[in-house]
Image: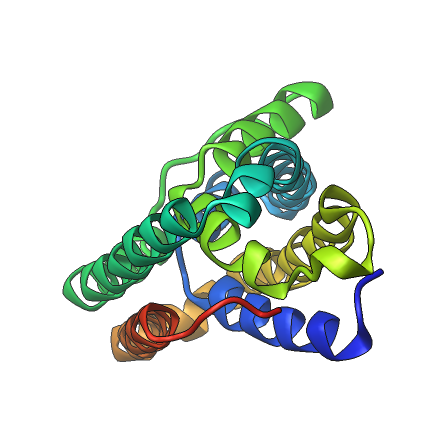
Length: 214
C-alpha cells in the first residue's frame, strides 16, 4: 500500500497546488459574494466531489497506462509541466481577477441545494489545473510492487478533495465576511495571485526534471 513518506510528500505538493487561486477558487468567491456563504460552501462540497471523480478517472484509466509505458509517462509529465508553468504565467498576468471577483456586486437569490452542488461538481470535474496535476504527479508516487496501482492512486487522491474542501471553504468564509477589508486594498489580492503564479511555475519546472517516485 501507500507508504507514509509518499503520502506526506504528495499531500504537501497537493497543498501547494490547491492554494494557488484557480477556477474553483474564483467560482467559490463569486458564489460567496453573489448569493452568500451557504451557497459558496455547498459549491465547495460539490467541487470536491467533482475533483475526486478526476482521481477515479486517472486511477482506472490513464493511471494504468502511464505506469506501464515509459514513453507515455514522459509525454504526460512534460505536457503537465508545461501546462503548470502556463497556468503560473496566466496567474501572474491576470492576478487582478481576484480583485474583480471581490468587487462583484451582482445580487442573486440562494439556489436549491442539489443545483448548487451540481454546479460545484461540474466546475471541479472540468478543472484543467487539477486533472493535469493528477495525471502528471499521481503515477510518480505509486509503487507497483506495493499492491494495486489503482487503489494506491485512490488513496493518494483523497488528499486533493480533502485539502480543497478545507482551503476553498476558508476562501468562501473570507469572501463572505471580509469583503470590505479586501476592497480597501486591491494589492492584497494581487499579491495572492502573483505569489500563487510563482508557486505554480516552480511546481511545473520541478516536475519537468523529476522521475518516477518508484
